[in-house]
Length: 406
Image (cartoon, rainbow, N blue to C red; front, side):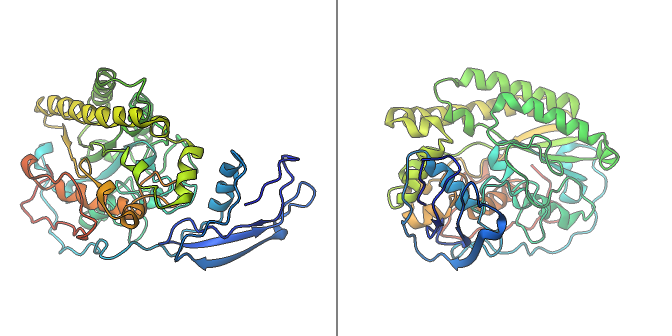
């Protein structure tokens, strides 16, 4: 991308041949754009399969960010594949409809009437398929796109009438949600009460009013942006804010089972950029995680803070579970907190990251998250998996008629 800064709208012909990610089929745009001649009719697009990374972009300071978005805007969510072995399709036998559950600790998948989600850009699905959008229809928690490997679709297999699934995409930073997914990109734990307010308001709409007094599954994944703000976040402040979140859920959302996820070691992302000139430039320019881009000392602080936040999360969730209420409980579903993709072959590690920003989880990682959480939902605490293995494609657990969510 060659940008001439003589005029903010005067850009030389862009010949973009930098492939964002080797696994993706990407639409590359060749555009002639000038302030006086920039109609869509002068944009010519052709598709190429990206089998290798080519570094032909000339960067000019922070204009790389604009160049990057120009490339990203051309990405299409068509053919997208993950490396072998990859996850297998969901292929479980049907179960008979379960009897009504009188206690939250006796829920079977077919008892769930609605799926819901709160969190940040990971749960919003930002950049998951390498474009600058939120792929909510495919996101691990409540994605409802056909064929998507998501907890929502797994629940739908056992209850075709389940509500809350979201389909399609949204633009980043949308606060009005989609379906019953109210995660907001860039959110920290102190932002989650606002998400709960949106969720509660939507449950009052005619479309969802009937599920208020039925069983609901809520997934909460928060803390990554708090870790990225390593100088302003403390374990004590995170604990206080998480308790506010859990109390609000307990008091305002009836009949709910809450899956609370712990976070993985975010600083690993930094070490996976060694083999990619694109990632070396994209991560600091996009500046999505301040402490990650700062220095080795801050990245060490991130590691320590992540462990402390996970410990706090387990403590808080245990306290709320111990209340023993019939219509509310919360359970930590680890799944990814010991994910060590930084130790994998760099090619494999990059497959776990978005080809847009080399920071957010890719669709490949997201599918692994869905399967890890789903499988943990039917395992007692001592047997819940802490990570996923990219070299052993995860397979969905098929619950029996006697299995309950735990």
